[in-house]
Length: 199
Image 1 (spheres, helix red, strand yellow):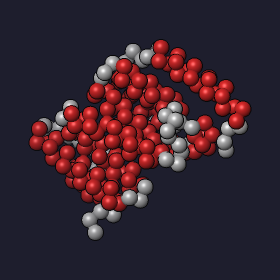
Image 2: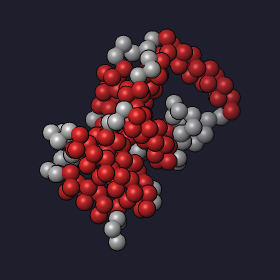
Image 3: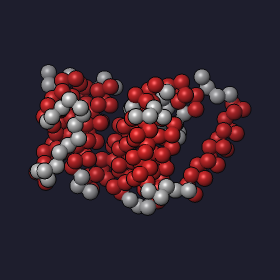
């Protein structure tokens, strides 16, 4: 389902014009924009609107030299790319593509890992071991979905190391856990079993 060649140039011009308008109207609060994006793809099944907000937030954080915000936006875009909402929109994404032109429907999981990897060094510089924990959990899940057990298990092990450091630095901090899990150890053990780690 590819676009006809005659459609590509006008659409490209239109998208460039829209992108220019969005840059001129940067979000007043990119953190709020980021939160809105997450709601749109996790709860409202609106991937196109979510991606626009994610890209707007990335541009705004970059323009503001806000490292934490930029890392959070990369992290969130990584989760967006591997989300069931995007998977369900296969027909649309194969036809019109993603706002990041390097992403295709077929390579979106590899690109998800790449966005997690963009966030990681920023979180490391900021000593955000809690976010490094979350980042490596997400990375491990994507690698498991790519049937790359070694990388998945390595990511989960790294997440555990970051979690230990986060707890050491802030014993009162609690990692976000999915429904049904009461402890980090239980959640991590479940992920490792699902991915086939440890034998």
